[in-house]
Amino acid sequence: MISSSIFAKSERLSSFLSCVCELTLNGRAHEINEQKIGTLVFGRPEDYDSSIDGIVRTQASRLRQRLDLYFNGEGADEPVRIVLPRGSYVPLFERRLPAESIPDLPPIPAENPPLLPPTKLGTIENAGRSARLPWILVTILSIAILAILIRNREVLSRGPAPIAPHPLWSLLFLPDQSTIVVPGDSALVIWQGLMKKNVGLADYLSGNYRKTRSETDTTVSQASAVELGSRRYTSIVDLDIARALSHFGDLRKSSVELRYARDVRPNDLKQGNVVLIGAPEANPWVELFEPNMNFVFSNERSREIYSVLNRKPVGTEAAKWDSQYNDPLHRVYGVVAFLPNLSGKGNVLILEGTSMAGTECAWDFVADDSVLLPFLNQIKRANGTIPYFQIVLATSNMNGSSVKSNILAWRVTN
Image (cartoon, rainbow, N blue to C red; front, side):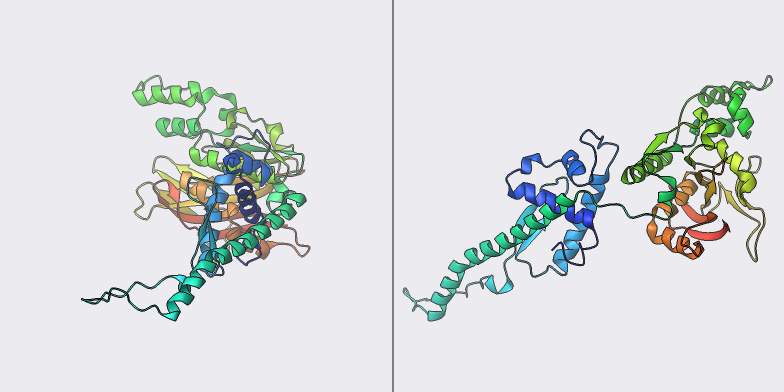
């Protein structure tokens, strides 16, 4: 099974399946749990927090899909089907009877059947075949189990499969080094929305904006803005991104240092690699990189228009892309920027959007190799490395989440 086309290219799923099957067949099903699988199969430390790192749950869902694909395709003739029930990691082995072994329904008896119908030779032969069937199935099942055990020992003896270098993530997560991840400051976004003012990086660093109130306007909204502006909030989208980035770092023996935007200092952006999540409205640190960016954000609060500006349009590109609250098409935009850090000795990845859905759109692009890798392959240098780049993405906002995006424009810096 694990040498089939469904599993051959997925070492981790094969190891997952082999591990839980071996434990079950050795009478140790009671030991199977998320924590143990994370440690044995995915190389997590024994005390890792499975409530934060959901790799086992994610891969279990993929394994169930692969099992269905296998037994409905290449393994359609297998005598035993392996099932991983939802809500459990303990596999079940279900016997599948061949079509010819399924007995026919007895014929409808005649109105006056004879008391002792004559015995037919075919009936005796079928009875003999039925008696041998269990032993045949036991033999086949034993062979399948033996193959799984042998394969599992080979996989475990090799240890966790090495992670192949990734053209982007290998530049951001270096072995034995830390990458700073900075989620957006949602309290800052709330303050600006209530006060109808934009806050630049200088005011953000001083913190004076949180104390600002109009002497003539004493509305509840301003009082709320002052109160909320001092709190430490971030969005669930940013936290999901940070959690996924932490997993990417773990796979490459790198660590992630989560830093609240209010606690960052300029020197942090000169040392090592950084990921900034959110547009300047939520993450003012992006401003430091905007002089070298072609695609930047503009928020016209009086008109309630949030735009991505195209400083130097090429060909038929638009000069800007507007996102409006009352847009019936729910258009939102995201920007991905991969740039050098402030010292030029590290890398910075910026993920920003005109809304949470826009930021999610930017993340979805870099997190999905099926769309990211073709783009990186298109822009790579002659030596195979990738240059710094910027991309504008368009998507639609559906209840706070993005749907499928498309690239509007991009730039590279060699």
